[in-house]
Image 1 (cartoon, rainbow, N blue to C red):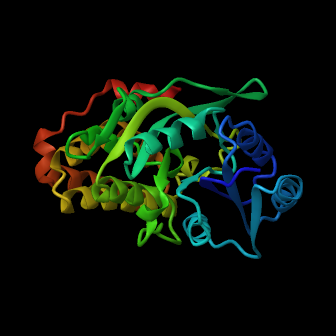
Image 2: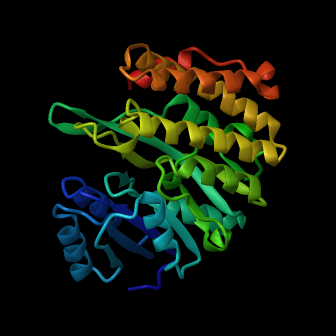
Length: 313
């Protein structure tokens, strides 16, 4: 087996129904020089057994077991502390890589020398007993197409829309003092903006590298925004990401984020707030919108109402 060039950190908790597909997507990679850290974050189902069987049958899989859940951010950090390859990336245990994902991502970085590369992704929704991948959404396309090599957030402010951890491969050196927030949801948003603002250069490519599963039972974190604690973490992540861009002087990227947040994030939250039984929910949403309106970049923001329609798929 050739020496690995990239480590994939694969955290999961109670995902036994989904994780075999994620592991199969790693085994199917056209680039075989990978290592995967499978992090069982206190699962109560058969996730640990699936991970153990994968490690027993393929030496590229290593398992880290937490007796109790420490959360997604802390689980990813535990993986980062074990990385010893040139490149590192993330794959949530209920998602899937496309077959050429690692070859395309690591190959791009090898050619450009950039700090990281970000690529496109699609959502997979449950349809008639199976999960069907959709199309690249317009905000993802704006962030990743056309291909750009050696760019910066000042040259390509719309890249700031691609805030998920698992759409990127980085040089491991980029993570020297960079870690995920812990004990909160949406931990990747602030980290992504720090990646954009601290990188000397990054690449974006339009290739779809991940199929992001929206679970049929609605149990994923991103499907729980009607819960007040999740909402508060969500708004804190949005605020924090904007603050990172502002502190870096990336004001065009702040405007791009406002465009997207006002078109995509705010309307669904306002709809939930309209019928939510806890008045604190509506108060939190209203306060957040007022904060956005008070930002100096708000005058330059022009939200595209057609983006909201993209949420239907």
